[in-house]
Image (cartoon, rainbow, N blue to C red; front, side, top):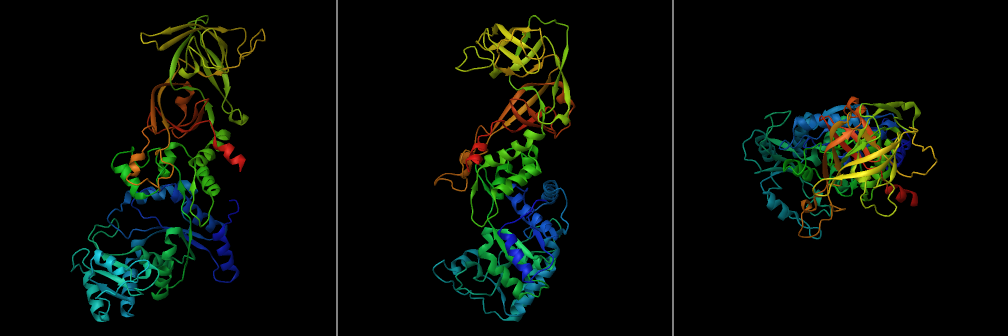
Length: 553
């Protein structure tokens, strides 16, 4: 792995130099209530790569402290995505926040006994009212001064299920006048009767994330708990918990900017809405920013990690152009993808001077940039398919493809001339009658005349029928985090984000490649063969406008 260096590694280097830590131990703590997305890839990369850099350990810990939306489906998908992205399972192990419920309960009891936690009967609305504002201090709860004995009994009764959901909370007793709102007696336990995907119905009280997370880090020996920037104001509470609970270790929390990408959403709530309201095919819809969606789209782990690294690791939030992600995969596939010919919107071409019963074979390279990729044989017959856009009845200026009485090269085969155009009753071109220059089959005319245009083609007799799915940005709004007033983010769903082309004609060798194979359909873009039979998803177009942006920097 290449050298990882950023402000987080600077912090770790300083800690090591000061003798504060020896073996670095990091973790990635996703909540199993949805699928991972490309923003998750940044958090995974940071924690995984830093552990690698220092020869340390990297844990996967499921933050399953909220049973309402958590499910084993998400647990399995998260493990699959991490292994796919990093090429391995976490070397520190796989853990669950629910494994520590008993310890969290014991820590809460210890806080009560120390006079640092109390059971509160205020409703959620009342808690918000008592909390104060950024400019005004909060007010103490009328239940703040309950005795230790009363709090212990009430908390035990909460666990025993003697109170209705939401009727009581356990709150840390810190400082209602703190300038940090998170320190104004935050709730650390709530009553929720919900079936837990691992604990079943054993518990009806659950610890809040801000309380459970530092305990979990401490129990696992995490040295550096690296999380996104919105938790920066939560850091004092994190440190308060590890300082005041009987824990074996004192981890350090540090924060980095989230990965925000143009023309998409990262909020799990929004992603769930897109899936459950059927705005997309599912979590793995290739338009989704989920890792499984990007995988189905054809993105590779190396391209995603390259994107994360190029986007940078800093503390300041920024919006990264989605075209950088497209540039990363395009740059990789230009070197590695096999080439194939595919006609996505076919028009029939008949070579009138070619024998009806003849099949000729032309040998084309699998990748002109990689001789070791070898070659494949492509059949050529009298009847072919070419791309609709490669012919114009009335050609625009500088049009270098086929037109009436014009000539063009068929890639790797003959030069052909269009002699006759057949149209239907609506004036649509349905067939071209052409003659081929059969003197040579290498695309060079015998008389030395210049033919500028080259187009791809597929033998009609050998063509494989397929559907091609072409994708565009899911949203028309560049910054979905800044939706105009009076609008909803769904108002900016791109109606043209998916274009399905049926009746595509592909060269026969494509039938033999396995699902998951990435190919350049020459002149048409990069595609991946989907697990669904006869479906090919376009990963990205060939044109790279972002490369010029990078060169200009």
